[in-house]
Image 1 (cartoon, rainbow, N blue to C red):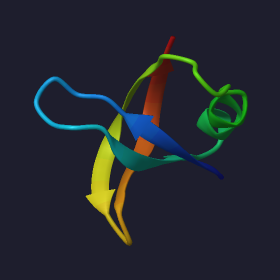
Image 2 (image 1 turned 90 degrees about the vertical axis):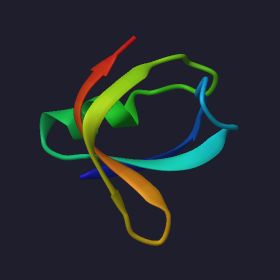
Image 3 (image 1 turned 180 degrees about the vertical axis):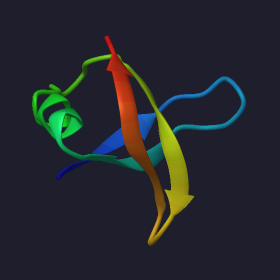
Length: 60
């Protein structure tokens, strides 16, 4: 498991922090992300001490 906090940008609301959680092979993808990199993350969202997303795919 790997966890990263990212600044999310959206057309419908102001920027906000999002905790991204990767399991198994997605954990490696989360660990390899770099600051300033623009990505698209898909997954299951939830709220636990802030918004978080369990990653199912990451696209660069």
